[in-house]
Amino acid sequence: MTMRRFVLIALALTLATPAQAQWWNWPYAPWRIQPGFRAPPLPDPYAFARARSYGVEVAPVEIEPPPVAYAPPAPPPLGWIYGPYTLCADPPACRAVVINVGADGLNFRVVPNGPVLGALANGVPVIPLRQDGNWLLVAAGCGLAPTWTFSWTAGVPLSVCM
Image (cartoon, rainbow, N blue to C red; front, side):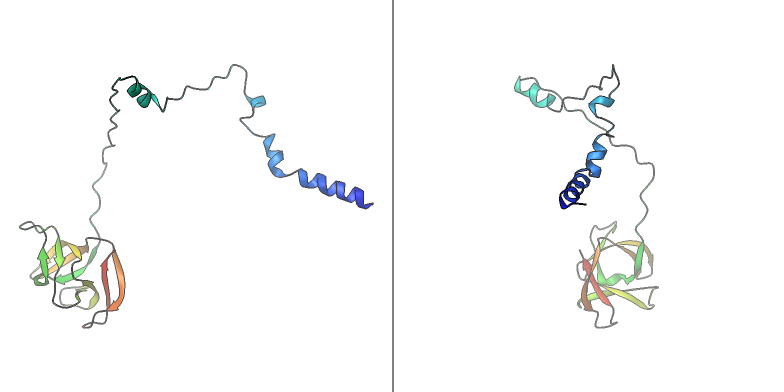
């Protein structure tokens, strides 16, 4: 085989790429459209602007959101905190409380007065789910992020709002 014939074969194989082969199988190619086919009319995206330019006021179409088929689930509980170290954000209902202690953070526990799971920094909002004496079972009121520091009292990670 001569060098010229080798180059021509290599060039022919290079030009016959899969992309060119797929072009002939394209389902919307002009030669594949059936006789008598009419595309459905598309809405005019500039109708409101065109009407406004002629001085005609067109009311925008109000689309109602779909009805909610279920109530959103309650947030998962985070743990138990000691209630006197919090401030009520919306008295008298107290649907949200904010951590307020004299130290860096407030420990949250597995059970009231039980082992410590973690700590929340001052100012973190929490949602009270249940009360047992002075103890509150709470859920996080925001996304929590680690501070990469630890509670001095229990040696657990300190978390803040993102």
